[in-house]
Image 1: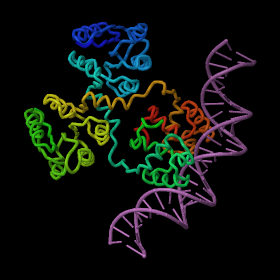
Image 2: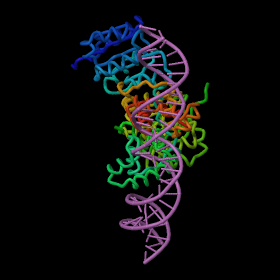
Image 3: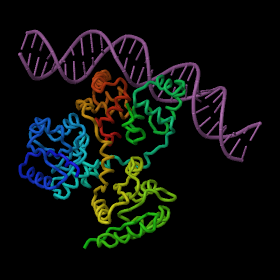
Image 4: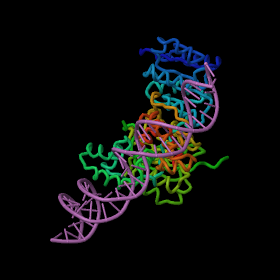
Length: 217
Length: 217
DNA sequence: GTTGATACTACATACTTATGCGGTATCTGC
DNA sequence: GCAGATACCGCATAAGTATGTAGTATCAAC
């Protein structure tokens, strides 16, 4: 049989923490190797944290918040995954947590079964999100169709270079075109995007996801 | 009792389509008011589409693709929600579908129970995503902590104005500061973000989600 | 009461950008 | 063979940007 996955629980409410611990430990493939009431207490146990596969943590903790906790974890134990469990499902908390690096975001009123399946799917590389939370995330992605424009391959690469802050001159050298050639394409880009400055074009490109944030430097 | 929700299924494979129809129709609160083998066939029935609450559709359809179908739906029946069901779970298809406006993305190997609960949660304003798909989406949001910078309120508003393409002069008038005052702040922004051009700053602001795409014009 | 940080104004200058207009080469369809 | 589209080059100019250096006002801390 596979080695059980190591789990640390960080939650300041004793009842909830013990409840989670009991349910999780009941599963053969999951083992709670530590449970703490604060991030500080957990991170003191560096060795324990280092061999942890998954952190299940509250967002509103005394001292270091759950958000800061996630950042700490991603920095020091990058292979571990974090599930935030919380009573809040407002935009701010959700995005803060996900930006910080949490892979899952569950509401505390989840059932024990949901908790266990959330943990398993996070360990398997998934992201357990409650449907409402998922919708918030999805809504950020949605781009109304009329905002879509077709840019040529060349135009896209020039747009990317613009986003990187390169000058016309530099871009020309990169693409083996003259500075005036770059100028020509940029005019076309501006017309298509209906803008008339460099930064506006970059802005629009990000908004319409014409260029992928991940590909920029 | 509440009126049942109206559902249209678009899927070219007869067996799958009939399977879905059977399962969905079995539920009292859900009613399949139409099932089609292509988007074109579905959209011909304009009146039917107009009273549809949810479209359950394949992504790889003959003729108009599922992606185009979603765009059509968001354009013509903006109150309806779309769930894409597909055999693909690669980045490209997922993001295309979500950008187009689908709220859910399920893999075809889901169980009937999952299908029904996906439909219900989409109708309730949620986003049913399989955990793998959710993870892809989450990964896009993650910003490594070291990229974070603290900008003052003033700096953020100037950065937003930069993204909108306003000139120093215009920004000065908006914020009741001199052009040189704006210049002063922009220097500081550049130093903090470690850039040295306007578009690079805008680019970094989007990447680090310092400014919210939704708030820009 | 002076030191230092923060917020802003002022001016100078080299550089970059936005935009208008005219030109050439290549390819496509009639 | 030519009309039209597409992709590029060149030049000119006004406007805008990046950056250095320097001065003032305010507030908080020692």
